[in-house]
Length: 585
Image 1 (tube, one colour):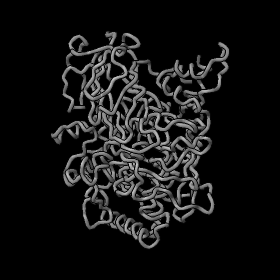
Image 2 (cartoon, one colour):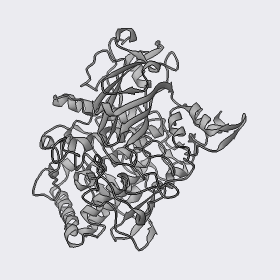
Image 3 (cartoon, one colour):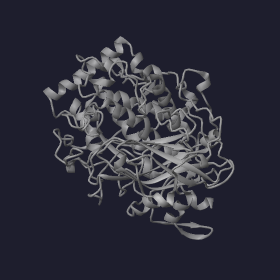
Image 4 (cartoon, helix red, strand yellow):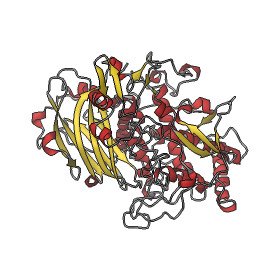
């Protein structure tokens, strides 16, 4: 069995080229530091759904092999992507950049997303850095750091007036995000009907890391300060769970008028859209949600980084837990919500095509990038942290650097932020051990009313809360994950739903409970096909311990729509075993 799984699961390889022990850990308290003896394990995933694999049992169709594993691919994903062969996504062709459109009407955007046409493309060589740039927490940034940040952003904005075609200008930099995620670029190759999309897949983290890397270096060059570092919005810490004050001054170049005015000042971030009005409950929900997406609900590498996405694949196979969770929560919380007003598309942060126009976008994504770093270097888990598939490592992007050169970069060259010349200031990680308390009384399926079997209700629309009885794959202390597949959404809408297991209390505004399993969310965006389809997997192992269901044959899955549930249909739901080390090597 193990011999034919090696091409799409875990391979034991040499340790990472850098060691986390070479620098200080990312948290301030010793209790938050872990050493994982399996840290060197890597994850091999293939997008090749065509080739057969030679095993001791003879030749096996790889599609059947993947289906047998469970959790890495779903039947729907493979069938809907018959052309998904083993090729990495290539850098876009700027000469064929098309028009991006607004998400609802299909009309052309008021600002073109296409970048300036280059004279040539250069394969980027990462410089040698003697001193690391230290990104500070925005709410703790010094006056000097804030002054440099404002000066650099103002210089970038000034280019919009003096040299609007300069790729280092503020709007040109903002348009990068629009072009890579809103239909301006097609995939290179014989895929002119397929958008290039860097969200909702394993491209999410490496694309945004490279994006911020060049953005930061451009800002530093504009003020002639190679030590300049972007701040990060420390929304994973209660002290940073408000809009950073540096963005809330109307006279500052960091200000953006297209933000939800209710969420300025002391308003607590609501990452989960739980509907709670209690500030303490909001903080508890935020910490619980981050703990879930970073630790509790993650079974496999792709659960965190996102599902495989290769040349010829349809966009948006499924985002990772962090992208679906806190990342999307901040985008929507900041964006103005006026469904019938002048800002009905939730510009700037609430929509992918406009998000880069708000300076807070880069501060937010600096923390998203930091969370990837923490997951790789700090979070204790047996899950492999690296993917060695060439389809992942060789995925390409194009950016303009601080010298206005168009450069080609690869996903596999950005995994160590220290090699890119920066690191993060150390702050406390209060979510790291925020496991909810176990239930005092076991929740029994028989006590939960209005439940139906999956076979009788699927596919199911989420216009209302749904409860579904799902059989476990094993009895006893099972190591299992919940898979929701064929999640069809209208990509032009903000989507959010939460998942609970054996939830009798119906306190849906409280996520700091043992029954909370995880979430799904998406930021609106436009593509040629506005009906997205995704899969998420939520680990249940710790949750089972906390609600005591070891002797049960079934669980009740409660799915609570938070936003636009009528635009969501779930085609499949099942409980399967988490892939074990024996299956994965």
